[in-house]
Length: 124
Image 1 (cartoon, rainbow, N blue to C red):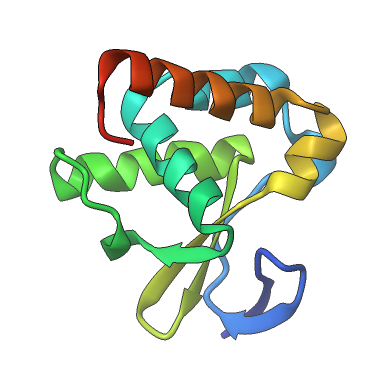
Image 2 (cartoon, one colour; image 1 turned 180 degrees about the vertical axis):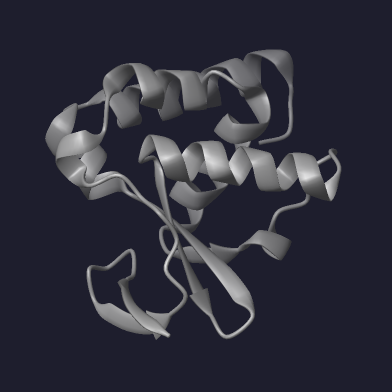
């Protein structure tokens, strides 16, 4: 096993998953990742929780393979960090990295998504 950095920056034992370094995160990749309603829903739930959630904590109306794809896109774009803890894959929003690179972007997108959801009476 290798050591990996969790969403808090602490080193934890586990299987490593590829993530872009902060300097490698690109605005267009973040915007692409957040342009999909299911991925935006995942990010909204992570933002509301403020910590880490397992993949099974999300109830998405898509197949397991599609859910896996959405998490991979979010991870590879730098929006979330995923680490294994035992057999659970934990997901956390990379809010600090995103806020440092693109000040106000995440907060604005989340607020806009909340307004749209209220306007359309959607579930988060």
